[in-house]
Length: 505
Ligand code: NAD
Image (tube, rainbow, N blue to C red):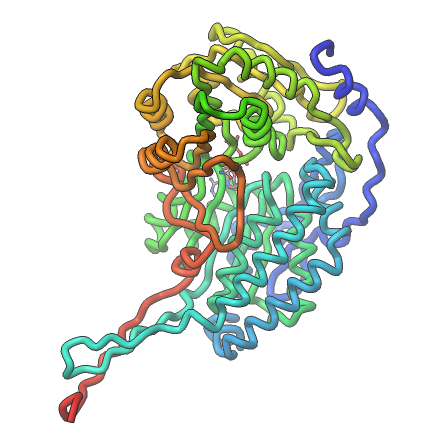
């Protein structure tokens, strides 16, 4: 491992004992933790070693049905949609407090199950979950409808009502944050939920769901089914008792769930899908700053981000200097046990992703791109990969086109704003983009011309509960977070009443 000797040493040490126990491994249905109807379980694996952390109840179509029946009852007959919005708000606020009280345990569980660094889960992700919950708690009593003047002879109330039972399917790269993005707005609006977690990372959602009940959530309002996509996920997508579906994951699976929803009861679907986001560095940029930001934009979360800045476009005038510095930064990146403080990069999620990423590295080499850093695994155990940098990448190659979802940076050269915008837009995706420049004019032009849901100017990966997030083109349908998320979980009803006498005397 000549390219990253420090990294190799860190990743071959004995794994640190996680400071947490696994308390919840069963399905959460109607307020109780229960076995799968089939009695089946599946292993969830520690990405640091490939060893089994725990066996988890494996929900399938029958369990999804039980969960939907419970959610239906909670919505159709239970107190949750009928209580005042202020009472719902207070449950979510208590939940946020409980998240903070159990922050260390939750962060450790998330690190253990997903290989994310403890620095990241404890300092960013768990606090953000509390922040999202408080944000949506605040909306609960502010989403009432409005009165429309109409024709002067009718009094028209436009009511915002909860949509009903929401089915939600989340991925493994941000299990807790995806829980918060989906469950927060759904509950704030008064809905019931059936959540299917990713098979790689079932543990943290079960833990925080127990806290949500401690905070006062009535039984049946949130049901959590661990299980696989083609069984549990497909059953949820096609269930006739589900009124709305929200999905985050790959574009391929997004198409499947959309089709299942259309073929069953035509439930509305929101999709957060993949990306191949450009990070554009102009020639007036401070190169050191640009290198650091481009590095973080790609390598954050082991490169496993839908919005990873995975095509680093660099202006030809600063290209050589940028590549040298990007290489140096990648070689410095601290890879190792994610429980160790100061580690920047843990293992990839599982053997499948690990192998897929290494196949992409090979394809990059075969395509003629220059491998300037990394390119191999780290150590011989678990799913660690060296921070990898390719230079001289051509647009039509697989590493420039496909979502690699790993620590592989591709650097491409450009010469004009028009050219880079055209090339940046030339993918089926449109999730996000980064623009790094001192020129306000160049930033404004690119921000408008890039066909993506988020443009970060001189920053990247800035997330806040209030900022809408979602994709253009095949990166998704609809928006999550912010006010926009609430629209996904509300029905609009017009109540029209004649005004007997004239509206004005
Ligand atoms: P995936 O799309 O297969 O899985 C996401 C979720 O969908 C999981 O909960 C999974 O169980 C479920 N699912 C899978 N098949 C399903 C089906 N037929 N019906 C209903 N639900 C189904 O993604 P993955 O296998 O976890 O990762 C593969 C690729 O997806 C990654 O390499 C990456 O490119 C992409 N991905 C994107 C995101 C994102 O945030 N946009 C997140 C994770 C993965």
